[in-house]
Amino acid sequence: MIKPDGLFGNYTDEIKKVILESGFSILEEMMVQLDENYVTIFYAEHSKKSFFPRLVKYMTSGPVFVMVLEKVNAIADWRALIGPTDARKAKVTHPNSIRALCGLDSEKNCVHGSDSPQSAAREISFFFEEISSGLERDRLDARRCRTYASLGERKDGSGGCATSGKQISDSSGIGMERGPRMGV
Image (cartoon, rainbow, N blue to C red; front, side, top):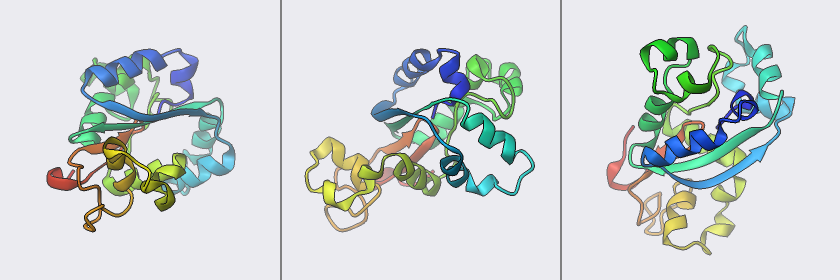
């Protein structure tokens, strides 16, 4: 996910270019304006932390750009590409990271990245409900099957798409693996 500061700073095209040059495919994307309710639900795990009110204010200050990315080892690779949470640290220790490029500090850090397959599944379905819809799954071609079935049942009954083996991730770092390359 590209956060409001990334959009306000006109970094979207540059971030997408870095994503593609790093071997990711962008399977889904959309721009959305989050309200307090959606931010509170999306970041529920942080609700008891002292920075939460500032996070809600920041994430509702403008639109966000959400993407579902696909790549083998997507979660780890995305998190490496975005750099440390604190953009000030990223500028020193990971100067080629996305957060070094466009982040300001630990709160206004330009992008979000999920940290596990479980977070990825929750976050992808949060923004792309149709991806997790079993009703849509039967109409998918083999490429789309990897995206949709990774959140549902495998065509072969084992829990994911029979053709998958890549990890999907939204630009917030949202990602998960299925098939022979299981594990994050």
